[in-house]
Length: 77
Length: 77
Length: 144
Length: 144
Image (cartoon, rainbow over all chains, first blue to last red; front, top):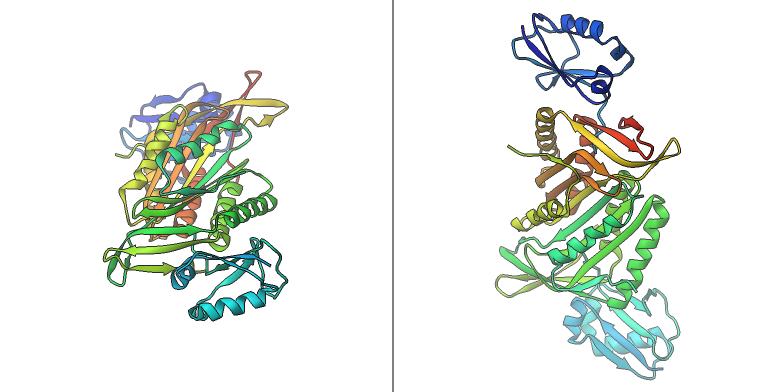
């Protein structure tokens, strides 16, 4: 599956990227493994993951075109 | 003593007046007696009295130029 | 001396001027405004077309100053409190009250503005006569 | 679709337009506005000159709609909820957030506006980078 990965806030800074495409991804835990291999520094940060704008705590199967966002604690207002 | 008497809200309507001078008034209870003699209808209304902008529950001596206001329940905002 | 009363409905210009006061400070993080508007309520099956406000002006000024002093004592983070209240006739849909509180942080701004509005209802010597569509009227009291 | 994000500081015109929405209804008696402004705080002995906001726009839109739906459920007297949040750079003294809640009666307007601001802080996917006078920066999180 081809998925879009987005980093926000401090995670965009530490990964040096805001947007990446990953191909051949089956599950969220696959994707997380590939991302932490590539950006090991993100383990030091708090973040939550949203798939298609919905928070996802557990593993899940990903579909083509899914948008997976890495979200540090919010700071709006 | 010469004092100014002011009626507000519904009391201005029922007394038909907003402002009156009373002469030869010694105390607040004197004044209240003269006013209820003249406007007996006001006994049917709730009101408080302020002398020179301060609420006055008890009797007190009045001085020349004092402003005595009859204030129905407030309804600002 | 501060002017708290304004003849007729509060205008868009008056509200804009109030909001432009926000710009003067960089130590404020939150501004809370309350705007009171005359509702076209139905009373005794008749529609309210306007409210006629009357006020004891010199006492309004004393009480408003006293309310502001109380708010600044209770909410130490508050920088400014502005109060503007209409007198005379204000039609349904028009604005009769504006309160703006600016504070360092949002919670004090919001709580202090809310408290200011309650104190205005409780303590400002202002009266309202609701004018109904058939030219009758009702004197309205604030309730707890 | 509703637009909740706005590039750069919120302008006086945007705030006036927000307030002009009040005029459309005669069933509203109270409007509560909250305006959030960037403070020139001192952080690590350095002054904050601006905040750079970033946002996950599609999720902001979903969450803002969800917040408004929740408020309208919890506060049955609320007629309208408006939310406007800056993205990009907003300097100290400039405005980055505006919330306006209109309701039949004052207490629901004030309480619902306050709750909306808390939910925005808690749930809108927005991030802030405080820019300091020596060109360093700090990522700031909202605290409880």
